[in-house]
Every structure is written in structure tokens, then in C-alpha cells.
Length: 222
Ligand code: SAH
Image (cartoon, rainbow, N blue to C red; front, side, top):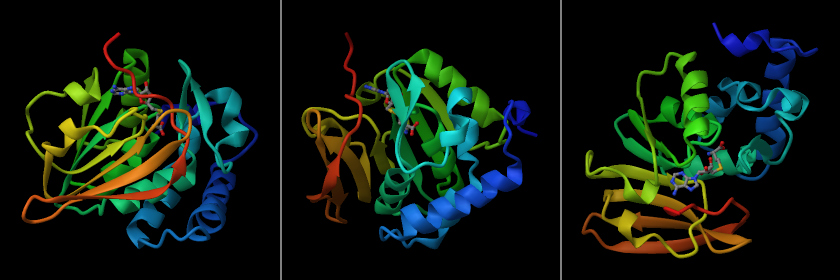
């Protein structure tokens, strides 16, 4: 079913499944992620299909990995924790800025009704689209471009997740968030603060700093 299953590797699918179980228990649950649906998605999605062939043996390690074009696939814990923080739900829509490998996109697509994902580097977008096509997820819409300049349709999302770091809090995204919605974004230079913004039912925004993170910088039209 997955074209990349034909990759050369000594590990079997059973080994990978075992590695994922361990990853969820030791890296993710141990650090406090509790949402059972998020944990199940992390157990199900074959992360090794999203990493470059020469990093297959590192696919389930406790850290980010290079995916080329100076970009990275995020650490499993960060993917799980950010996903949990935006309150996924089967009736909700999510905007992801920074498709990258497509791994986070796959996790989101299992937990949201619809995923809109934007990637700046067209080669990465194409690669991710190719891998995700093999999963048969019909609820992902791909865009290439600057995620801060996405088209007006749909106008608003129930959740927004940004996986590249702007220097300043992206105020323009707040307008694209539904009431009751959550936006998670790493803000800053070099080491960033992971910020969780929540819009209440009256439309008021509150912002919480979660923990320090290291993401690649968000690119702006240059
Ligand atoms: N969630 C991804 C993270 C990839 S790293 C994963 O786990 O694989 C961040 C990604 O954001 C990179 O692929 C980078 O090219 C992309 N990016 C950077 N600036 C962007 C922008 N303005 N709009 C959309 N994507 C952007």
C-alpha cells in the first residue's frame, strides 16, 4: 500500500510498530501528553515513511531530523504536544503552516475533519503530497506559498498550527481563527517561546507561553 515500504531497510514493519509504541510511552506520555486520540494517532502514523532513506534507523529517535532544503521534521514529542494543545476534534478544521515532511499533516488529518496545509518550498510540498497520497487521506488540501498570506477561503479555522518560527507574534493569523479556536506558534529568533493563543467565545484573545523550542525560521517573501 505504501510505495516507500519498498525502501531498503533491515527493519520490518513489526520493528517499526514496536519502535512507535516505545516512542509514545517513553517520549510522549512520559512528558505529559494525555489525549488518547493524539496518542493513538502517534502510534498509527508510520513516521519512518516521512524521513529520508539515510535516516531510517533514526526515524523514532527523540529529536528532530533533517529532511533536506535546510528544513527538519519535528521531534515526535513536539508534534504530539502541539497537536494536543489545539484541541483536535472530528468536526473541526485546522490550518497548518509548514507542511515540511508531511508527518504532522498526517497526524492532523486523523484528528480533524479537514486539514489545510501550506508549504513555502514547493519541492517539499510535492514530496509530502506524494507520500500522503499513499495513505488515502481525502481531507488534506495543499498550498504552496507563504502561510501568512494564504487565500481568503476558507476565511476561518478552528485551529492553526505554525511549525516554522516568525520573529514576532503573527497577529494576522488571529483574524483567521474562529471563536473558541486555538493557535499555536513558536515565536522568536534562535530559541523561541512556544505560544498558545486561545480566542474565547466573545472573540477575546489570551496568550500563554508553553515552553522553549527550536524551529526553523518562518520564511517571508524574499
Ligand atoms: N511540521 C513539519 C515541520 C517542518 S519544518 C514536519 O514535522 O515535518 C518547517 C517547515 O515550514 C519547512 O518545511 C519550511 O519550508 C516551512 N516554511 C517556512 N516558512 C514558511 C512560510 N512562510 N509558509 C509556509 N511554510 C513555511
